[in-house]
Image 1 (cartoon, rainbow over the protein chains, first blue to last red):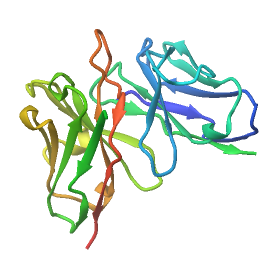
Image 2 (cartoon, helix red, strand yellow):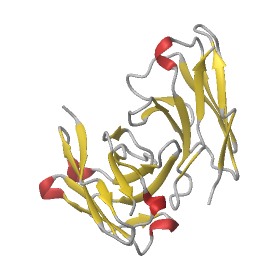
Image 3 (cartoon, rainbow over the protein chains, first blue to last red):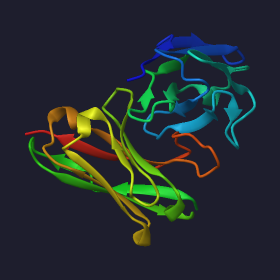
Amino acid sequence: AIQLTQSPSSLSASVGDRVTITCRASQDISIALAWYQQKPGKPPKLLIFDATSLESGVPSRFSGGGSGTDFTLTISSLQPEDFATYYCQQFHSYVPLTFGGGTKVEIK
Amino acid sequence: EVQLVESGGGLVKPGGSLRLSCAGSGFNFNIYTMSWVRQAPGKGLEWVSSIIKSGTYIAYGESFKGRFTISRDNARNSLYLQMNSLRADDTAVYYCARVPDTPHAGLYFDLWGQGTLVTVSA
């Protein structure tokens, strides 16, 4: 199974900060990566697919980068509603699909 | 409104069975690949199973083969997960999720239900 390692596992940041989360795959997955945001008690919400494509309706302050084994999710200017946990997911290998361990973004 | 609504969760004893349902509405359920993803309390996301629109191809995570069965009824816009031989570590919120129906779309999820909690405990 393809393993995804997210770093950091948590971070503290202030409103207006630029935040970058990293996801590293255990093997080359091309651009077969998605990013989700999850708030407590809610289901995940798709932010980015195909590593860099912004899902419709998602604010442009979110951006994805990378290919191969190293990927990033960047929030250009953190807003109060962005405090949440973020997960990456690979779909290069369908069985199994795998998720990263999550990155919790907290208020400093 | 485009939505997925899960039902069927609850408390079950170890070794018991449960059948989850997911009702889709506001979109053409028949054309989408559907999946189940779970999340244990305080933990991350874990893919359980996926089924293509016709139901003719199904895949499971290793932990679920032989115990869980995914199925769908397109006439009822519904997805199901039959869970047998349940264990304490199956305790989780189970989400129903939709795969986008766009050309060359990969197996990621653009629509999620609110989830249904399954608790396995004596």
